[in-house]
Image (cartoon, one colour):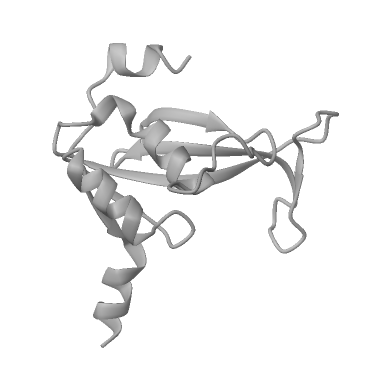
Length: 128
């Protein structure tokens, strides 16, 4: 399915990385239980979407992945790099929340010609 997304659609310039919990009551090893959310149990999916809300790439969270985290890159850093692999060098603008953002990730994305921004920074400035 991930290979079909870019075949039929070119992503717009502004992209966002976010996590989504899809309600699921069945039996799977990777089901999440988050008591503070309205959808408190289900599967967690990381998505790369453009501003028309078209999903350009997804990654299913299968539990703690100790192999993806290294000394240089956190697990969220690796997830963002995985999701943005198809737009490297195309000078897209990427927005994300604090969960994903880090200075090292921003430097890494800038090197790949993906301009990134923490989406909460604009909200904080707007409140001033």
